[in-house]
Length: 205
Image 1 (cartoon, one colour):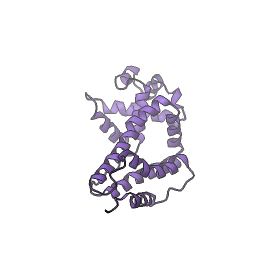
Image 2 (tube, helix red, strand yellow):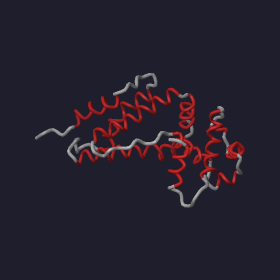
Image 3 (tube, helix red, strand yellow):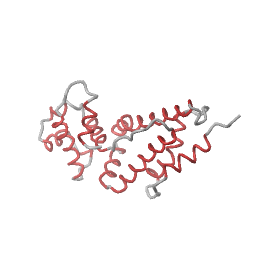
Image 4 (cartoon, helix red, strand yellow):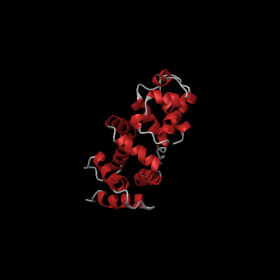
């Protein structure tokens, strides 16, 4: 996601108009510090204010603390969520897993992204906020997609949809997160989805 799109998306959820230029300079200030190798733990609101050329009060009017600011920085750095056609459960599942595969490749090829992700995970409060803001909504989207498939008779209706999505997500997450040396070849998303769907289709009476 580029910075302008990220700020536009966030502004639509806020109660009153904000100066997009000011928010851009603040978020760019955090990213500049990260790119210079400053650890997240050492980035204070005061330091961000100096880097962005704004007052601390300007930042606090937009974010109650640095954890909330860091979550918005992470949102801006995240690629945009893929668009789902809604016409095929199978194809939409492939799109979701392919997006995860591409994020995994990006993190492997960018020492900067990898470093930031590692620092976020080392902060329980920041990781919890990132999980609630970024990860959980995507998981709920995948579960709702499978509920649609259950209603349409495409997958077994006797398994919890959230667990079903974990079954699809698990193989890709294993390679992206737990096995950074594992292959992430093109076609992996299709292979995972088609293999699992073969075993999850309802059994004909």
